[in-house]
Amino acid sequence: MEFGICFWEFYNMDYKKFKADKLFDGYQFHTEKVLITKEDGTIEAIVTAEEADDIETFEGILSPGLINCHCHLELSHLKNVIPPHTGLIEFLCSVVTKEISRQKLFNKK
Image (cartoon, rainbow, N blue to C red):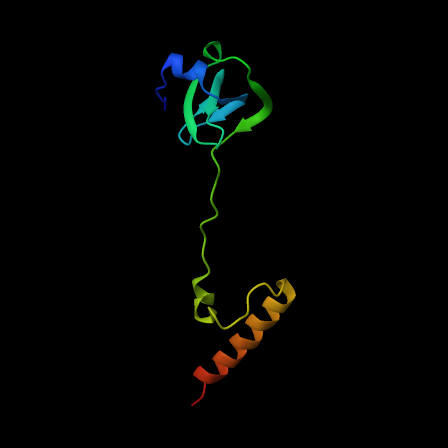
């Protein structure tokens, strides 16, 4: 994936330039490429190393940010039942207590 950017724009704006052993664009790995971002982190371009100056170089792989988008549907019935920001131990105790109560309710004959 190549992003277009005007040569003059590239040299006259405040961009950050990053290079690593490998650059992953979400589809494939690149070597000898430079990631160009705006100050806010927005990706502007991926260019050859010859097209960039003032490059920050890293060992390893540069990759887009990954989002943890998993969900826990089995706990959705507890939304607004367990108070937030109580810590892990309190959360787990609440889940177990509420889940046992729910199972007793549904297993009544």
